[in-house]
Length: 260
Image (cartoon, rainbow, N blue to C red):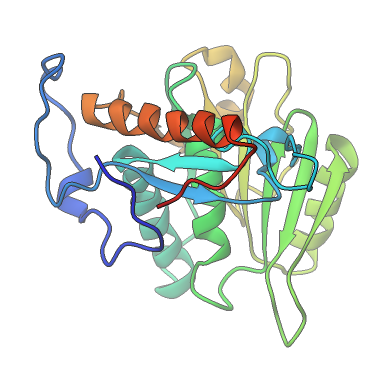
């Protein structure tokens, strides 16, 4: 395996990601897939909402460990989820075919819903068709992050709230006619708010299979569409751990970037 800097000339096609595996891959067998691209990595020196933008830093202020807080691994399953969300956005905001669909994404703990898919969705939503969305919000660990997209020459910005005032701010934006999309990380110890504008804003809940996490939300938002994230392919796991190993080497060398 090798690492390439920059954006790939092409990511996986719909046909490559919109499929459900019919059998488990054979262990220790490298099945070539497509163009060989196995994992995309999104890097943010500021971190991501899932970690509350907390990152460990070295003496010079640079992120100390890659992959833990600053790097998000994007695999085919994450792109598949985004394709579904994007199609719904297009129907709602571009073709004006009706209100947005509330989604619930279900997957096993540790499979990469909150940090992986959640962070990837945030990135894609912030880069969605200019002028179509005004804000994107992320609820995680009793905190609400509200991302304002650039508009009318005004730069984008982000605000952080505790959950209750954050929900209040979202309602104010909705009442003001702003168009938004909500990402909500459901945990057993965090009650999802039920007074959100899910009929007029897009939304996706990220949850484990524990129905208690999203039961009230599902009952409140009739017509929710459930999505299910599949397990890692063997080659994706190899790519993931190869990238983590690079992070270990970088840390051992005093955090020198190893990105060749």
